[in-house]
Amino acid sequence: MDFSLIETMRWQPDAGFLRLDQHLRRLARSADALGFRQPQDARGKLEKEVSGDTPLRVRLVMSFRGKIEITTSPYIAEAEEAVWRVKVAKTRLQSEDSLFRHKTTRREPYEAARAEFSKDEADEVILLNERDEVCEGTITNIFAEAADGTLLTPPLTSGLLPGVLRAELIRERRARGEVLKLSDLSHRKLFVGNSLRGLIRAELIE
Image 1 (cartoon, rainbow, N blue to C red):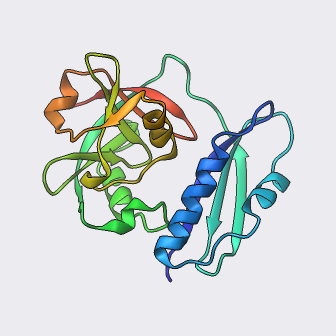
Image 2 (spheres, one colour; image 1 turned 60 degrees about the horizontal axis):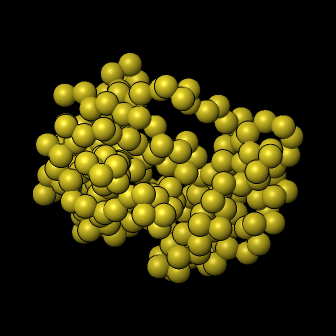
């Protein structure tokens, strides 16, 4: 197997790992679906790598044989008033490619999409599928606010990674899955988000 599974999460000195159970559940589900060996004591290995009084970005990479490598780096939160500039890639995701429903080191379409714009042009880049449906960003899920305040987020049938933050928002009924086209984003309050960063206000740059 020429790729590995990844989970990226945040550790806070006062709260520990954010959404750790959900990250470990996703890792185990992906291992099962893709024929990887199940992770052994991932929780214990993670806990050994974190300490101090600085928030950390923690990245777990697991090989086909179940070997786990963990790296940490300081995590700097986005400013509360941050608004990410978001552009749309020409690169497409194929909704039938089930591999991209798992977080792996196979990231070719995301890297290609990101490379279409410089960091000065866009903070995040959205990918569509072959039906012109909104899928996800290169490192975030997409959320558009409905009239009732609920966040609309593309369903898995559009072909995207089921993000841990996305799943939490759906479970809490703050978000619901709905097929979105680009025209659905233009007149709504827009957010991008993932488990590491939380929700970030976004603006679609045409």
